[in-house]
Length: 457
Image (cartoon, one colour):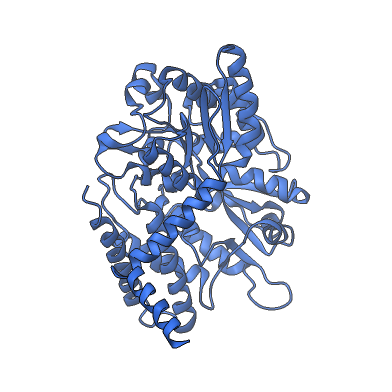
């Protein structure tokens, strides 16, 4: 028995002679090979292939592509819905192997920069700036929306949206409390009203605003509004800048401690209940979220309204941005001209963009479209307000988001910073709080810069 064990031990030692890590990699490679053999990648069958990640885009694109194919009877287009997180790994693998690479692909704003790593000449997407300049679209699209999809003077993606942000609020409750939102110009005024309206105890609690204390989502909207960023236009990390410190010092007491006026609204059923019950009065609401509210909280129709974000200082910016999508054309496409035609058809066709707005409430990035009467139509759900006009009036003031391959890593680290600071403030209040903010930001920045230093480019 012992001799058999010794032989097995000798074989294992031989197998791991170069260390455990190479052995593990070999095992994973073998497993991956077996998986790929029995689960081959979906082969692209159309003349043009489009990958998208948003299920909500699928039906509209299928209709649009059918029209495109009618105009090009000798051309077929295949559309594939790929999960948002899987699209990055799957696309990178396809690009690396030059196997079944789509001609066009939609990428979410947080992941776009990861495809721009390395020498700019090696980026796997076409530089669209020459086409955008020649066609005149570069002056028709909101300029700040090119920033997340650009490196230097090259533009690798067409923006799908602008996503200006407003506050959705329970109009009926505000009016019952005698609050005139037209008189709320700054966050200081908003917070003072919030302290009066918030009820943290009892059987009928109520909070002024929905803010997430455990992720970066709510915080970054407000940081962008204030002129802050995770990266600057040169791709340099800025999360430990003084403006970020001061914004965290301002934000955390809104969601933590005995005087908080904000709580996490959640999504889905918890969000709907918070709206209907008046548990939360105000919600950070980009254009796309208005459609979610309409669909999920239909019983709130006529009770809701929209207002610009309060400014950080009198006369300051009254909006921000949340989310976004680009459409890129891969450099390996065999039909670059047709791919550009399809991109223009999907993203810049006036008729289709107006249809998209009416179905999704998403404001199109083409500024000359905003004069269309459809944006002035009153919406019953929003207490008769012209939703499109309200968002269009703010769109030119949407702040830029600058590109970096490390945006997703930075967002994750900022989420950890915010969650940790929330817990610290709940336990200790102001005692040592600023020191904690600076320490945690410095640690997060050191981590991200360490990741960036591994990239020789």
